[in-house]
Image 1 (cartoon, helix red, strand yellow):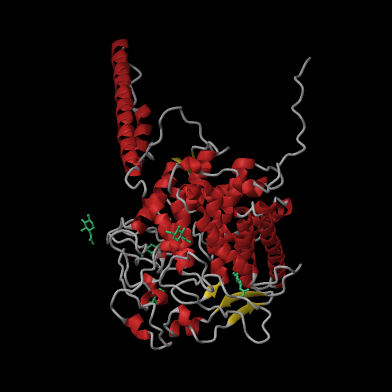
Image 2 (cartoon, protein in one colour):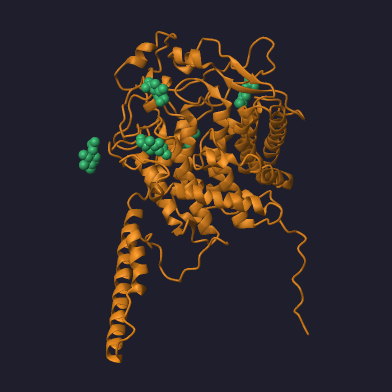
Length: 573
Ligand SMILES: *[C@@H]1O[C@H](CO)[C@@H](O)[C@H](O)[C@H]1NC(C)=O
Ligand SMILES: *[C@@H]1O[C@H](CO)[C@@H](O)[C@H](O)[C@H]1NC(C)=O
Ligand SMILES: *[C@@H]1O[C@H](CO)[C@@H](O)[C@H](O)[C@H]1NC(C)=O
Ligand SMILES: *[C@@H]1O[C@H](CO)[C@@H](O)[C@H](O)[C@H]1NC(C)=O
Ligand SMILES: *[C@@H]1O[C@H](CO)[C@@H](O)[C@H](O)[C@H]1NC(C)=O
C-alpha cells in the first residue's frame, strides 16, 4: 500500500524508534566540519577517521538491534498458552448470563431457568421475550449492549474461525451467538417488511438495583421498554449484530437469510428514524452505529449500496465525530471499529472509485488511532502498572482496554496479511509487532501482570476477585430470598458462594488500586460487553498468527471487478 515504506531485506523486526538524542547526533555527524584548507595527509587521516567512526557506528548499531531483538523475542515468549486458557474461561461467563430456559449442557451448576415470562403480559404483541442475556450483575436485558456483545463475538469468529476450532470452542461460541440472535429476532417483527417498533430493554434499573435476588427467583414485574421510531442507534446496532452473525452462520442458509432480512429492515428503520430526528442534536451520537451497521450489512450482503452509504454519508458534515474521542471503542462508540473494518476492505480488495477517498481517510484515521495507543504518544494516560486509561480515569477501565487490545492485534494481522510491514505515526515508522505488544501488555495486565498481582478474570489464575457484584453468584443456589431479604448477601463480607467463572470485573481505579467489594460495582461488576471484548482480544492473541482468516468476511462480497477487460495485447510498432 501507499503507506508502506521500503526497508532493506533483513531482520529489522526490532528497530527502535530513534530517540531525540540519537536523531540529533545522527544529524550532527555530517556537520563535523573538516577544515577545507588542509593538506592531503591531514585529509586522508580525517577520512580514515570518518570511515572508522562509521564502521564502529554500524557495528554498535547492529549490536544494539540484536540486543533489542533478543529482548523483544524474550518478551513474546513469556505467556504462550495463557491466552487460550483464558479464552475458555472468558466464554464461560456467557453461560452464566443466560436468561430464559437454559439449554442442555449449559454447565453452570448454580444457574437455572429464569425470567421465562418476559414479554408475556395481557395485550402484549411480544409473546416470547424469554431468552437473551443479562448484561451485568442484575437481571436487566439491554438490547443495545447485548447487540454489541454479539457483534464482537461474531467479528472474532469471522476473523479467527480456525483458532476457535483449534481450541475446541467453535461450536460453543456459535451457540452463544445464536442464543443472542434468536432472542433479537423476537424483539421486533422480523418477518415484516418494515419495522415500526422494537424492544429496547427488559427490566427497570430502579427495581433491579433495589432488589437483591437470584434471577431465578425474581417475582417482581419486569417492564418492557419499547421504542417507536426514536432509537436509530439501537436499530443500527442490532442490524450490525444480525448482519455479522449471518456471516458466522453462512452455511446454515435459511437461518443466515433470516438474519440478513432482519438486519436490512432494522437498518432501514434506523435510517428513517435518523431523518425523523435530524434536527435533534442527539442524532449525531447515532452516526457511528449507522456506519458500523451499514458496514456489516455490506459484508453480509455484498450489496454495494451499503458501501456507498457508509462512504458518502461518512464524514462530510459530521466530521467532528472523529475528533471527539478517536481510539475509544466501546458499546457506546463504534467509530474506530467501523474504520478498521473499512480499512480492511481497502487493504485487501481496494475497491477504488468512488469509495476510495473516504476509505483512505478511514485508513489514515485508524492509523492515528493505533498511534494513540502507543505509550510514546501520551495521548492517553496510563497507570503506573501500565493500564491504558481510555475512559479518562473513570471506573470500569478494563472493557475499554480489552476492546483496544482486540483492535490493535487485529490491525497487526491485517498489516501482516497484506504484506504491509507497519504504519507511520507522523515522521516515525512502526512495525506491526508494536501493536501486538501493546495488545499483550493490556491483556497481561488483566490476567494478573499488574501491581496487585491479581487476575481480573474470575476463576482464572491464583488470585482473583471473590466478592463479585453479581446476584446469582452471591446467593446460594437453594436460598430463595425476597427482594429485600437478599440484601444480607449483598452486604456480607464473605466470599461469593458461587464462582462466576470467566467474568472480567469492572477493574481497578486509576492508580492500580482495587477493592474486592461486592457493594461497589465500580470495581467488581462484570458485564457482557466487557467479556465480549476480552474474548475477542484473547482469540486474536492466542495460537498462530497465520491462522487469521483473510477471506471469510468477504464471502458475500462479489468480485469487485467482474467485467475487468482482458489484459491488453503486447504493443507492437
Ligand atoms: C459442558 O461440559 C461438557 C463436558 O465438559 C462439554 O463437552 C460441553 O462442551 C460443555 N458445554 C458448554 C456449552 O460449554
Ligand atoms: C422463546 O424464544 C426462544 C429464543 O430466544 C426460544 O428458544 C424458545 O423456545 C421460545 N419459547 C417459546 C415458548 O416459544
Ligand atoms: C491524564 O491525567 C491528568 C492528571 O490526572 C488529567 O488532568 C488529564 O486530563 C488526563 N488525560 C487524559 C487524556 O485522560
Ligand atoms: C507481586 O509480585 C511481585 C513479584 O512476584 C512482588 O514483588 C510484589 O510484592 C507482589 N505485589 C503484591 C501486591 O503482592
Ligand atoms: C462509581 O463511579 C461513579 C462515577 O465515577 C461514581 O459517581 C459513583 O459514586 C461510584 N460508585 C461507588 C459505589 O463508589
